[in-house]
Length: 347
Ligand SMILES: Cc1ncc(COP(=O)(O)O)c(C=O)c1O
Image 1 (cartoon, rainbow, N blue to C red):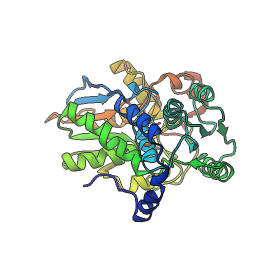
Image 2: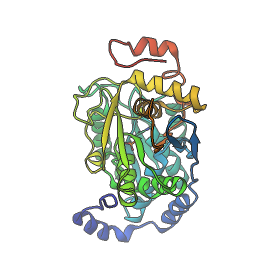
Image 3: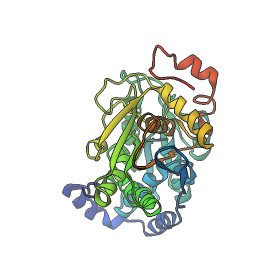
Image 4: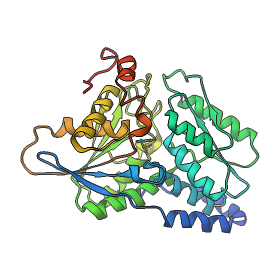
């Protein structure tokens, strides 16, 4: 298993042609941001029959694991001359990636236009509107039950409209996966040592791509479990309406094709809610929906487990606060996640 794919030969030639416009002061600043990126803690959680570890990616500066992908993508783009101080960055995001880009690009003084959809958490949208002079929000679903294709259409319009645009394209950009390979996985393995099972929530696939390749290089016997949510098309089901941002997608991202995945678990949004509440009750960790889904997958897999104690790791991908009015609000859950529409029990 190798590191995430490098860019193609054609792109390398384009990169050489762009060398002339590399913005050296900007490169110094983005290198400093990368150097100063905080490490996140790995905490041991008591759990019968397994050695369970959570890597607290919610401790990243903007509160999610997306900082790792965002900083690596930006640094590589500046290094290739694709971003200068005259560039506007445009990206589609359901929230966390936009927050990471907004924070880093503000520090770099490079304008950023996030393209959001109605599923964005209210708190995330408020912060983005504070950080970015222009925020775009699509309102029309794309016919798959989600908004991704509508967001991508708006990104294409903005790329045509604005003079010097860089589009990170988090769904295909191998630099995002490389950030997780170098930073998230590097820190996890340095802290935990051996990992037998790694459970990873999947959206763009950058996280599972980077983590699984690093594990494939260093611990090829490890089992990598991809966790997705019903209504997502990532693992072949038809796309349908989903309400909780984070994991799931209405397309199958190419970064998932290139990931090393041993097993796929697909749970309902009600399971996400139950997992979030169980993680809070059992371990005092107030996490976002995707982490709840991953924790639910771990409990389904290991409840009643006996025998050898495997080392099981997962990421606490973001914090629960932005989900206070949805995942953690009983009336929202009762209104939006009906038991007939979804499988699984809500604690
Ligand atoms: C909270 C959270 N968890 C998990 C993911 C999935 O990560 P990836 O897009 O790298 O597959 C995302 C992606 O947006 C996320 O915001």
